[in-house]
Each structure stands twice: as structure tokens, then as C-alpha cells.
Amino acid sequence: MTVAADLTGARVLGPDGAWQQRLSLADGHIVDGPVGRPVDLSGFLVLPGIVDVHGDGFERHLAPRRGAMKQMAEGLVAAEAELAANGITTAVLAQFISWEGGLRGAEFAAQVFEALAAMRGAPGTDLIAQLRFETHLLEAYDTLPAQIARWQVPYVVFNDHLPHERLAAGRRPRSLTGQALKAGRNPERHLAYLNELHARHGEVPAALDALTRRLAAQGVRMGSHDDRGAAHRAIWRARGVRIAEFPETLEAAEAARAGGDAVVLGAPNLVRGGSHKGNVSALDLVAMGLCDALASDYHYPSPRRAALLLARSGVCDLAQAWALVSSGPARVLGLTDRGTLGAGKRADLVVIDPATERVAATISRGVVSYMSGPVAARFMAWPGARSG
Image 1: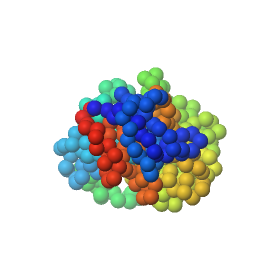
Image 2: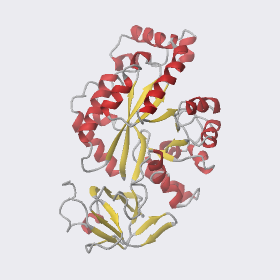
Image 3: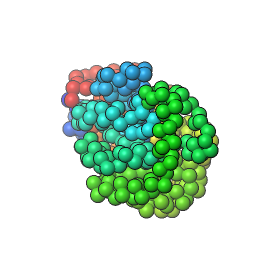
Image 4: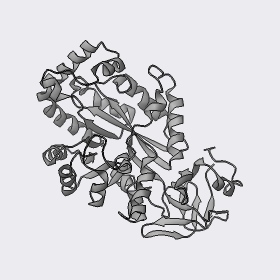
């Protein structure tokens, strides 16, 4: 059952700020006219639901311990509950296919994508699959487009995390033994495999040219991860890869903006005051207007915290800050039915307690996906929070 109610008394965020006004919900959408069932949310703030454009925090729910990978559906249910508790109404789950193996291997990825397909359309957070593909897995190129079509993955991001410098110098990569154990390989065999991939580095650009053409023809949205500079971004743009996830430098972010490409930054980078890898500060890029969307990356509370921090510190106003976690990422993903609280849009919203800045309730497509504390009493007369 979906919420049919007139939310009254709260400050509701629009494009020009938060004002006290009525917000009416019916049939999973925001509607113009009152529906006749008032819910008093005085003292609360109502914001568009968070659209998380990239996050891998779900991994800990799917495999909380090494080898504990048997209950994929239950893990996704737990991940969805955490997303909802953090005000996220649309979440892109970033699943690797990588030489790292284990949770990031092809077999595990297939299980994740099949489980996501089975959950599609279920009440609660809208879960969208993203494939993060390690570019040096040349043996996977021929079959990948068909697999992506079968799994119904709409978004692919390209990564290259091979430790090329150490391999080229004949040095053992850091954490080699731990990586090998996660991949289920003998450390020496794992090192040999990495060297084999590194040795074929020269074959990767042409293979990527062909692969991106095939994926573009399938209508797949594509991004690159950790662009290092303008030349790097230009190469990806020429392939039709128009999303720059987590550019490492100011130069890369400026090149993306100049070329009309979307820039996605990590909300944890902004919350903690800088990149844990020493890359360009997300706060600096936001202040310079070089950000289209903030993503959870590995920490689901961070989009909410980052947007409220930006508004509280005066870097931008609340409407501009919240757009980085709602309408901005919705545009990046091509989702025109969400991201703002306007008539005809999906009823995706989050209720915030301004005193604590914590999530009091989350409604996704008109269904209550999370509710806690005093705000729950305001909705008590409504009988079906999660019944579909």
C-alpha cells in the first residue's frame, strides 16, 4: 500500500529554498491537490529522496565474512534497509568484475546482478546495477556485452587498479598475499597473473575502443573512474564515456566540465575533509562549481551529511547543496521522474529532524521504507508501511 496523505506543517525544499507548505502524495507520486488525509510534520524538514549514483557499501551485507556468500537475497534486503535508513530512495550498487577475484570476481558479480534483477520493482529503495569493470581483463571482452544485456545492467564504469609501476619495476605489489587469499590463489600464482595482465597493457586501448562502441549501441551509460588529467578524460570522452567518477585532480575535473561531461565526487571525501588517497579535495571542487553529484562511495550516511555540511558551512545554500545528492545525480543517471518534489514526480522523499540532522522517515515511490522516532506517531493511522 502506498501513502495517500497531505504532509503539512513541515518546511518542504523547493528549487529556491525550504518553505512551509503542503506536499500531497497519492498512487506513488506527488500530486497537486489535497487528498484529504493530513499528516502534521511541523518541526521537520522534507527533502527530495537521495539518489546515490555510486556506492559499494552493500558488499558487507552480501558477504559479512570471507566465504559467507550464500544468502544473496537476504544480503540485498539488509543493504536496502541501510540505504532507506540514510534517506536514499535510489541507489546504484557498484559491483566489480576484477582480477581481484572473491567479492569482485566474475562469478560473484553474476550472482549479485541476478539477485538484483529478481528484486526489480519491489517496494523500497530503487536498486540499480552498476558494473565496475577492470580494463585489463581482456579475456572477458568478447562475452561482456551479452552478459550486461542479460543482467540488465544500465551503467558500466571502467577502472584500472593494476599496480603497474611496481609490476614494471619487478617489485611485489603491496598487500599481495592478502589479495591472493581473497582471490583464492596462491600468492606466487596471483603475482604471475598480475604480470600477465600488465604485459598486455598495449592491447587494452584498442579493445576498449571496440567494447565501448558495442555498449553504446546497447544504450549503456558509461563512466570512467579516477581520471588523472585532461588527456585521460579526453580519451574516455572520445569513446562516448561521459561520466567522470572521482577525478583525481583539478585538471581532470575542469576538463570534464569543459567537455560537458558529468563529474561525480565522493561524499566521504567531503565529510572527512579530504581524500584518503591524497587526491583533490571534493570540497574544493564543489566550491568551484565542478561537481554534478555526490556519491556515497563506501559510506551510506555520507551523502546526507555532506549536503547538510555544505549548507551549514555556507559553501552553498540548502537547495544547491541538496541538489548534489538528488536532482544532480538523477540527471547523471537520466532519471527524469525523481530528484525534485514537484507534481507528477515519484513520491521519493526524506524527512529530516533539523535538530539532529538525522533521518526521521524515508518514502520511496510512495511506500514508507524507513521510519523512526516521534515522526512515526504522525503516521500511525496509516496501516501499510511496507506492504507494496
